[in-house]
Length: 331
Image (cartoon, rainbow, N blue to C red; front, side, top):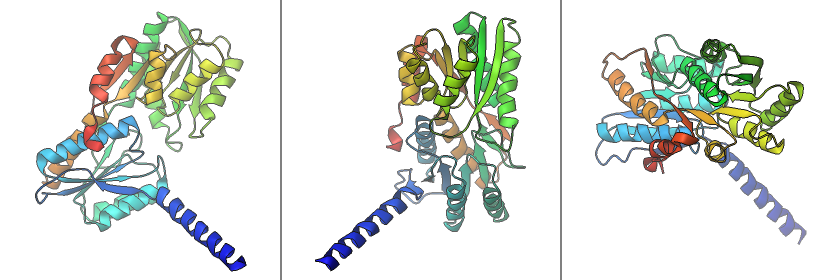
């Protein structure tokens, strides 16, 4: 009986180890339903394919792949995981991919793998990150400066041009402040046109799960005059909204957010968040695949391709559903 018990425990441990390995390993899938021999094999590295932005990007990439008879492989990793991203680039290289696209992270491992790909003459495009650019590598995506400008416009709209503001900026590129500076530049330049729009405090939000909640509570406690919060981090926007609900200050403190997470849209519909700024993931994915095809063919493309940015409030929330909820190809 004792040996049976030990054997059972060993089997359970083995199963748990297999499950852990499964859920911590990037998954790869074919995202183009090609029925004939594909012209090229393109690899896109995504970071959380269930999020609305990534679902839209994959959908756009799939559409472009189908149009051009190109096999688009998606390697999905955990958000901001440098080790998984480096491994994903290595896997793409070993699979003899014709081209690679990714949202890069400023990290030596990733830089080394991208250098390896470049030395093998594999075309590379970066998307949706104008913080960490690579020399000679084209980039596609929304402008951080324009994101800041659009967020400021919503802030002016909701406040009538008079507010005391706290800014919450993402800290995704902690070793490179250019990303934050571009958004700040766009925000502050637009806000400076309105003398009664006063920025009381500026904070960066890290990737900690409860960071947005803690920071929101602290800034309200330390700056009771704040009546408007602008959050430029997609994953933290719902947390800021939930804190405003928990503190029972909905309406007293307005929120401008970023991204199209389901919770963010629901908070707009409930009147907790006034509006959000959304990058067009579908356009980014579509343009990325077509641009990679051009590079494979050695055709010139633009060094930088700025894609569309949308602003959504309760007034035009139907437009959000029309533009951002058709991602059937990625299912």
